[in-house]
Length: 129
Length: 99
Image 1 (cartoon, rainbow over the protein chains, first blue to last red):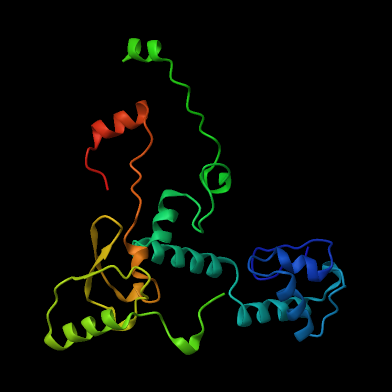
Image 2 (image 1 turned 30 degrees about the horizontal axis):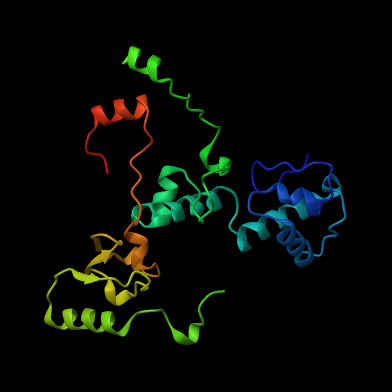
């Protein structure tokens, strides 16, 4: 299995698709990289030579922010928002949608699984309390 | 659509003048303002503002990181104190003063 920039192991797919398994490389970047390096984007990942793979790796590291570095950058950006106590930062802190979406319903991606609150039954509640 | 660069950031002339004046005199009193939509520009750094949130004024000390944001982003207009229920009651008992 070919290996590009460390741990990423794309499979039997076309190289233009396999490259997208690298965090930070999407359809557009994948094609651009291959074009710049004169590699056929339709070629299967397994058919590439070691030289071609290392060239792709070098190019990615030179031109793009990828993998751990990109993840760190994202975290830093969020951390900055949290630190300056702005509205967006506060939304990140409480784990609610940041861009003004409704939260009355939906917003499950940010809020996580539903936490159902039991309907209060007057008599039972008072008995327990 | 974003604002035209030609116009520059939205900073009401009145507020800019007050900051400028404070800069010259060296005073560091908080500037009371209702201009929540005003963009924080580098001139504002290290000044303190009292930004209206619709009810009271929230103290905002501007740091370098805040440049490019708007004053209103730092003065929340809503207070969420949590939902009612047993958990909320326990939390309230454990920590009465939580921001």
